[in-house]
Length: 353
Image (cartoon, rainbow, N blue to C red):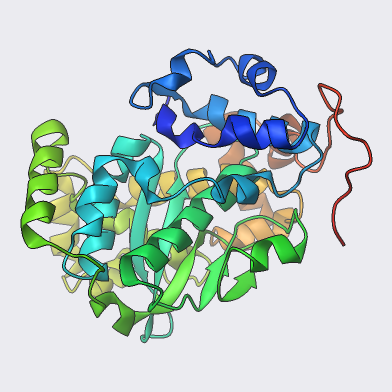
């Protein structure tokens, strides 16, 4: 089934396009979206259509920081009832846990993880987009990571200071655009997207936290969507991703991170109908399609990020997963290519240096 996304995610798109001299309705129609339907924020649209919409707008309007500019017109309210529950959590850890459990309500392809780091004093709030077929998603990822920044600032009243912001692609916009909106050190061409913060900051109280309102919001979410994603397989998936490139992604490493014996891990996964090697392979596949779409990464770098000692292993896996070599997949995404604008814009607008 194709992944769906709440139409609320498109808030601010039309006025931004108009401000930049474009035709928002035409862009929406080109992406297969009905402008009239989008006036209902709780309907769902195809996530791939939204991703393509952002890329087309950035390309056609010659605005490489389109996703970041759209961020200026959005806040945590785009998440609907999930935001309400998070805003009334007791502390930042509880708020992140709530967002992680129910982010799939906003979009079925979205995942949010709290991951341990090599530095025990840090954790990463990792943002992941699980699409089965490769597609350029740079604007979407920058918008999503930017919203994570806004969420942290809003929830803690600015007391949580991000240490590092990681993006999976090469820089596509002026540094000034990033620095105006994303705090901490900027790292591009990373294995995944997310924000590193101090582990101590997880205990920061949430501004306006109200236990009764949080309970009411969570009760509503549970009644509508269940208890959220809490399965062991989900936790294993979250741990595998950052450990692949480090070469510490065997079942014994993951089991140790979860404070359990490898046999216990296998047994519990089996009860959920999952197998460790299948989860690991699935994570590699998802990472491969994301990294291959990034023109700035060589195939050797991608193979290393996936924990492969040889580039040939990446090639064999891509043929098994997608039926094509990595280079053919990259060509199919149009990575590194710039299509011509689909409509007239102000040709004097140029990218800042």
